[in-house]
Image 1 (cartoon, rainbow, N blue to C red):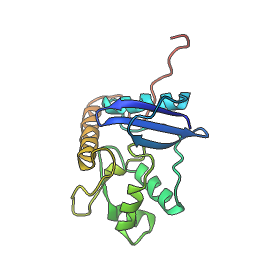
Image 2 (cartoon, rainbow, N blue to C red):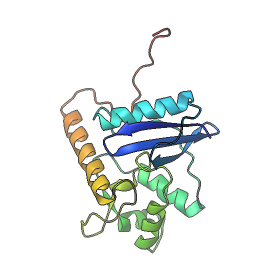
Image 3 (tube, rainbow, N blue to C red):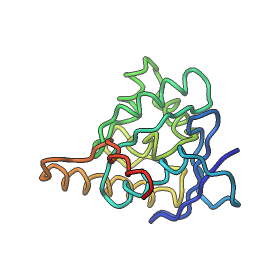
Length: 172
């Protein structure tokens, strides 16, 4: 499966592509593999994200999971950068009676960061859980990174939220 690995402030990440969509993001470095234009675009967008230049992503995502999990993951993509929602909020949005089921769907998210499960917290304002990277330390890092980027870009008249930079001229 085509994939690309990159070094980030939260460790090595590997992004996987299948049939023209991003299907997984895992912690750790994979052995060299085929790098497609989509994977390079994903790596570039992730680097911009970690550099505070963007808070959203413009990539085709195809997470594999049950219909319920895909519904939850779609709801997560609607949480604005720099904001959070509770497991209960997401449960209500998707018509589920169990915030615990939302937590389980978050834990099964195959494309963390790009599908921002780190933006989901406990109903009382507690941090909740996080299974990626170094767990809660990684979740706190991602939330703080986004809060800084949103704050910085709110003062910028031309924020880059989710916009891809213009394509480079050919031959460069």
